[in-house]
Image (cartoon, rainbow, N blue to C red; front, side, top):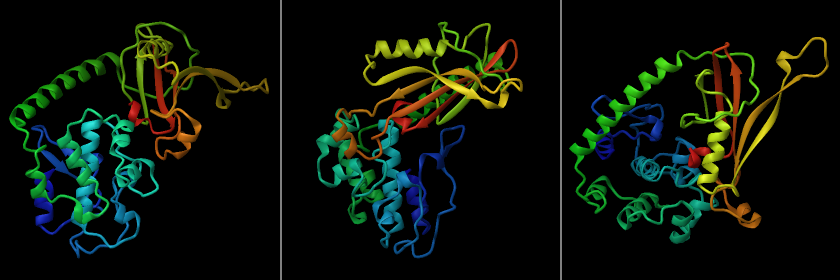
Length: 321
């Protein structure tokens, strides 16, 4: 990213929408930055346009101030770095009234790192990332200062990192090919299945919404229930994670001879806000103050295959992804 910023800014261009979704890598793990829809090469040190993505935007843009495009690119890069290292967003928005960013503005770093689970991050990383999140754009480090920072000079063997990443990608591609051959092509099916509790469901990760097909000879829909329930028990999450069966009324398959729509079951997983216990404290937290709700539904494709749809319907699920 330092190479990208150095080249781009050296050409007199600022991106203004740097985020994970706009970073690509090729087969050799070379980094590519995409989507220059908000980029500009005019008056890059004296800009006023409201541009960017909410969670990555520097505070001066949100406040309608004149801003330096290089400095706001640096802020967005800091958000990217934080997510890569920590796995969650550093804050919902860089605003004075946003709980997490306000902790940084107030200098309450101990609370901030506790709330974001970063107590064990190195002092060098914390120093760098806090500078990149500076409220005043002039206080953010330059590319040269980042390159010279102790965290960047910790002696990482980039050739070895690239080699390890390529090996990991190759393994995942091999596994993905095997899974595709086992699962087969996906398609939407109309009929939902009642929950059938079995065991042995494979581990899965999810985004806001995802769907995939399973062979009913090997996996029953209810195996998801049992695996989540087991996960909750093993990790002692019973006070925060609640698993329930919910009725789902299907008007689209209502019987013409009855006024009642047919009801089907689906799984609902409700997760309470992380690190927040009392209602008073919860009301003060912005961004991570609501419960996370994930719904898991089942659809019949044929006698052998079912489609499983997993959707986050409430809250910020990225922390639990």
